[in-house]
Image: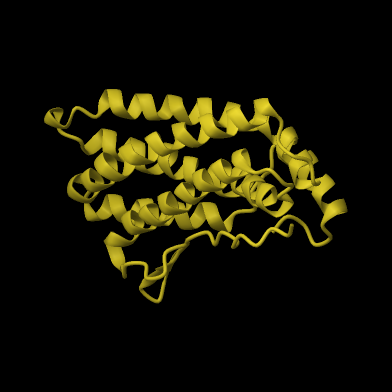
Length: 213
């Protein structure tokens, strides 16, 4: 049965005062508000990744396109999302938060979950490559997909409910401009691909001429 799930469109940093993301009508933004809204869009797309992982975990027939989309997210989109947090949002929030915000433990915990999630995703990449070639997920793969989706959803809830509203409140205009500039710069740079992803993408190039985009 063919896979007819839609492709995920990564958010694009502000152009002409808007963000283009997965939502039908993303909120307008300009100037210093833009990085916060872009991060909401990034998180929306990461929630779609969670849904994709749950769909793949539950499937009873091969879904190679769905597995490919998950691989592209894990190898391309999620590293950018993690870098936006680790190099942009987290250090600025830590510097600007007030003692009453109680953010130190939350930020440290989220940084640790980034590391744990990346390590878990790397272990799953070879299995996803097989699924992208037409295999069904095995029992262990299904369990890993469910667990990773649940962990990522918990992470996104904290970002959306606590960090981003607080960033809007605490970060200065200069902080937000610098955050936006860093996000733009990271997306302009050629992105390195780690060894596990590079091997899988080389295999996918054989299966799907034109690459995994």
